[in-house]
Amino acid sequence: MRVLVVEDDPKMLALLEEGLAAAGFRVTPVGDGEEALAHARLDRFDAIVLDVMLPGLDGFEVVRSLRARDDWTPVLLLTARDAVRDRVSGLDGGADDYLVKPFAFAELASRLRALTRRGSAARPTALTCGPLVVDPSTRVVTVHGEPVDLTAREFALLEFLVRHEGQVVTRPVIIEHVWDHAYDGYSNVVDVYVGYLRQKIDKAHGLSMLRTVRGVGYQLRPPAAP
Image 1 (cartoon, rainbow, N blue to C red):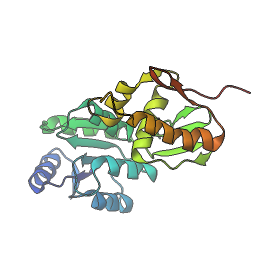
Image 2 (image 1 turned 90 degrees about the vertical axis):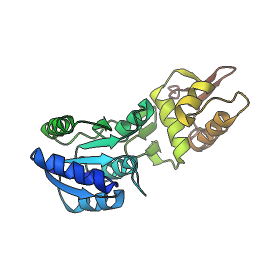
Image 3 (image 1 turned 135 degrees about the vertical axis):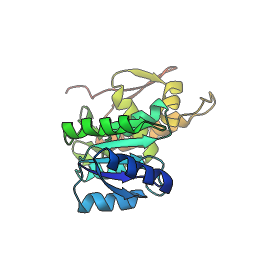
Image 4 (image 1 turned 180 degrees about the horizontal axis):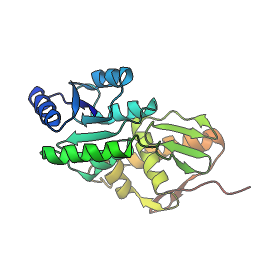
């Protein structure tokens, strides 16, 4: 069973290589995201063990790049992070599993065997709301099939709204999930970014999907049938 292991700490990389080899895996060790993508492009692996905190391209970006080129090799993310938002970000980006450091090699090997038994994951379903399509793995957004160019923060806000289609979400909740810091009641950052999305999605395509609920927050809903 061939495994690509991506870890920038040489000591940790050596431990992973030794431990997985002892468990019966054939390991190809690499130290950064660019090298990982190059190896994945040139060779075929049964699974990829990928550290999140890499120099240059981090683990999340590596997964998105793999999925964007239709490489669905099972990916297990390794990281010291244990916040829910990091696990969600990794899995939504196309990873298949997530293991927090420190971990037991027996568990890592068991999870890898489980992933390889499943085989390559199917392409995750894109999120849709009327003519709007949001693909979390490739970060591609289209309206009526036409691509919409969004910044990273605009994409994060739109993805959050699409996942809560039809629900009225408050500004503090949006701040918590999209900006990830304490809400400043005097800040209008949410309103500004909703305005950006309205320009690029509603006004550019003659729609009215982003609704302001005065005194509460915002709601994304599909356009009414003609």
